[in-house]
Amino acid sequence: MPLLLFATVCGVLMLGYPVALSLAGTALAFAGLGFLLQSMGVPVHFEARWMGSMPNRIYGIMTNNTLLAVPLFVLMGVLLEKSRVAETLLDAMTMAFGALRGGLGIAVVLVGMLLAASTGIVGATVVTMGLLSLPTMLKRGYSPSLATGTICATGTLGQIIPPSIALVLLGDVLNNAYQQAQLSMGTWSPKTLSVGDLFIGALVPGLLLVVAYIIYLLVVAWLKPSTAPAADREALMEELGHTGSIWPLLLKGLLPPVLLIIAVLGSILGGFATPTEASAVGAFGALVLAAANRRLSFSMLGEVVRSTAQVTSMVFLILIGAALFSLVFRAFGGEELVNHMFDSMPGGVLGATIVVMLVIFLLGFILDFIEITFVVVPIVGPVLLAMGLDPIWLGIMIAVNLQTSFLTPPFGFALFYLRGVTPQSVPTSAIYRGVIPFIVMQLAMLLALALFPGLATWLPSVI
Image 1 (cartoon, rainbow, N blue to C red):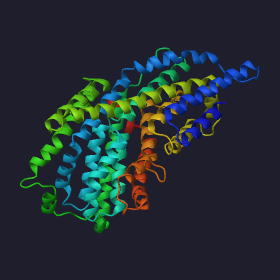
Image 2 (tube, one colour):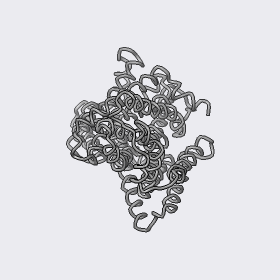
Image 3 (tube, rainbow, N blue to C red):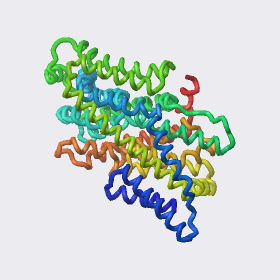
Image 4 (cartoon, one colour):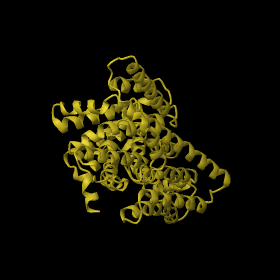
C-alpha cells in the first residue's frame, strides 16, 4: 500500500494536476480506502491513530519561525527583479569583462552568482538572465549552445548558493528528520540542525562550482575563440548608453547587491541573526535599493506583494499536502518498509545513499524541489541519518543533486524556463548541447562531496 500510494501520487502529478492538491487528495483517498478495508474486515495494515495528529501538523507548519524566511526571501527576490538591480549589475559586469575572450560569459556567471545569492529562486534567475544577457551574447557572436548552457547552469546556482529558499525548506525538513533519527536510536536529547548550518555548508561547494564554470569558459574561449569572442569596449559602452569612465557604472551596479548579500549572509555567519531575521534584513534592504533606484511606486509594490503572496501560498499549501501524504504513508507502514528496504540493500549505507540520490535525481525531472523536499526527504531522511550520515553533508548532496537534475535534458526545469524566453532561431538541441559540460562539472562536484565530505562540513564546524 505505501508503494502504491507513492506510485499513484507520481501518476497524478504527471497528469498535470496541482501538486498540493494531488498530494492531499491522493493521501485522503488512500486513508478512506484504509478505513473502508478495515471496516470490511480485510487484513490491511493501517494505523488510523496517525490521522489524529493532522491538526497539530498544520498548526506546526503555520507557526514555524524558520519557514517565515520563505515569504521574506521571496519578497527580497521579487523586489530586486522589479527594481532592475539585475539589469544594472549585468551592464556593469559586461563593461568590466566584455573586452576579454569569454568575458560576456564570465559576466553572466558572476551576475548569476550574485542574483542567486540575492533571490535564491532558480526560475527567476534563469528567466532574468535569459532576457537580459542572451540577446547581447548572440549579437556579439557567442555560440548559441555556449550562451544558453552558461545561462541555464548559472541560473541553477540559486539552488545551492545561500540564502537559497531550497536550503531554507531543506534545513527545516532535515532538522525534523535528524531529531526523529536520534530518537529512534534512543537519544532523548537530540541535537538540532539549523538552516544557518546548511547555508554555511553550501558556501564552499557553491563557490567551487562558480570557479569551475569560469575556468571552463576561459578554456573554451582559448581553444575556440570563435565561440566566445571578445567584444569591443567602446562599442559596448555606446550600446549601453554609457560614456566616460566605467567606474561609476561598476560602483552603481556592484555595490548595492554586494552590500545586501554581506548584510544577509554576514549577519548569519557572524552569529548576529538567524536566517529568519536575516531574511527580514534582506527584504528591507531590497526595499531600500528599489527606492534608491527610483523604481519604488505603489503599483510596483502591489505587484511585488501579490507575487510574494502567490509563491508563499503555493509553498505552504504544498507543505500541508505533503504533511498529509507523510501521515498516510506512515499509517500504512511506509516507514517500516523503507527501513527494511535500506537494511537489506547490498552495500549498506553506501548502497542506500546511492539509490536515494538516484531516485531524487530522477524525481527532479517531474517534481520541483519543494515537492521532493517535503515528500521524499521526510521518508528517506530519518533512515539515512540513523545509519550515521552527517545531516549537513546529506543536505548539500541533495541540493547539488537537484541542481544537476534541473539542468539535465530532456526534462530539466531550467531548460524549460530558458526555452520560454529564447528566440525561435535558437534550436532546443543547442540548449541541450550547451548544458552537457556544466552537468559534467556538477556531477564532478557530487563525486568530490562524496569523496571529501569536509567540503560541506568543515566550514560549519569552524564557525
